[in-house]
Amino acid sequence: MADTIDLTGDGGVLKTIVRRAKADALAPSESLPLLDVHYEGTFAETGEVFDTTHEDNTIFTFELGSGTVIKAWDVALKTMKVGEVARITCKPEYGYGSAGSPPDIPPDASLIFEVELVACRPRKGSSLSSASDERARLDELKKQREAAAAVKEEEKKKREEAKAAAAARVQAKLDAKKGKGKGKGK
Image (tube, rainbow, N blue to C red; front, side, top):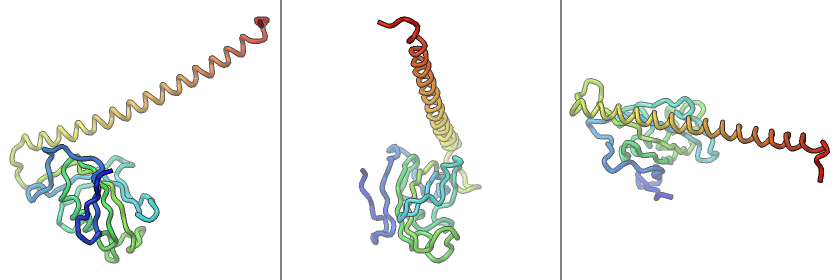
């Protein structure tokens, strides 16, 4: 397992890399503060999922450092690169804390998020360094969606093959039973 990094120095935000990004991957910056992420949030104590984008395969977008997400995300996501998946564990004071805690999340809850940084983009109205950067970003997102669809299709095919093989085994057993009792004994 990868090493866990204490990003705040007080154990408040811990990051463990689950999947590394490519070395040349983009990272959040002043010019690329809009982040697209997939995530799943669980309670550290129980492991119960309280929020996820995986069920409906949505992307959550926010601006890094704008105060629209919990402190732990602002701290941890600025250390990530596109394509990286990290497990972020945060104490309550870096999570929702007592201020602004959603009703279904206790203010004293320690939380664990598994977050994938999907993309970094400029603010609306900002100019990209070039149109080719945007095209490359869109191509990468398209490739990721196609790869996920191919994996799902392959899993479906394997399930269908397993069903067919099981049906063939059952039919073979039935055929073998039919053959017995018709005077073909030894």
